[in-house]
Length: 362
Image (cartoon, rainbow, N blue to C red):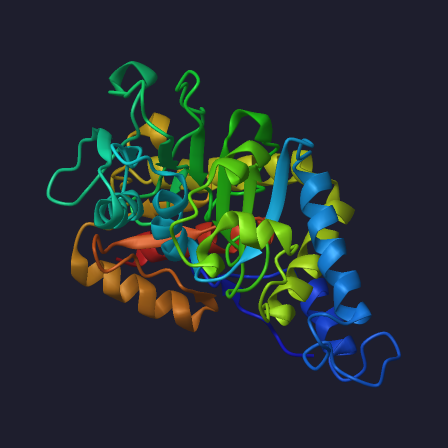
């Protein structure tokens, strides 16, 4: 049996072993068809069953109300940075943007290419954000077609735990790196989108959960392949979808359900994060976290050592110890431990054990 390392990469990230083992078992012969799921037509009954199961699991786990529709799209969150304003902007306004990190900044810049967005909040210092805003700090436009924000910031290690109140303006959330970490009231959002490669599956597929009235109001002055209405009308099968990615999303979400669903994910994730932040805060300053305490991410724990030299040595020795993917983003450096749903408590405990030994030997 292969000894698997603990994978702390921010995405593509670690996946539940049972989901991978199921894919391995079914790879050559999917449900007695004599063919791999990779070979089945995206319009055939074998794939259609998987497609519908994946959508049903998303709906069940997130308790998606009947007012919303679930779509599968491609291009990751980066594509949605452009597609959101393309579909939902007005001629005079391309949305309010809460900019809490690099990804929110990129979303705002993409909106500027097709319309006139406004900044609702942005307090970066030399490209670094150490916290998320409070409701009273938001500068909101009453005529905005939507309010956009990123729920979890993978580079900076910060997270928004409360949904902004935008009144009658629809709230749109990029949840790529924390969707399904806990139960979510989907009814509070006009739209949620998320790349699957953190908590739901592999790279290659993006989940969009959008209010049906926003689909109906969407602009028509863009190619049909970019319209939410077209995707919705065709049950996300308007073109050849990334079928294997959806298949793996199905496998991963069945594991989430079997584990106890999102309440259990929240319990585990909260425990893992508390242990890791506790080790950082209890290191007498050897490890430091740049994010303000109230804004610390449960999914991506970002921290530093006393010097860049020690950061590099830490990562190198961690790799040898089977703790992979801990190098911080190139924009901020340091260390980043991504502890998504599939990261076990054992993995976090092994990391803390390594941190303690490394500090003593340095």
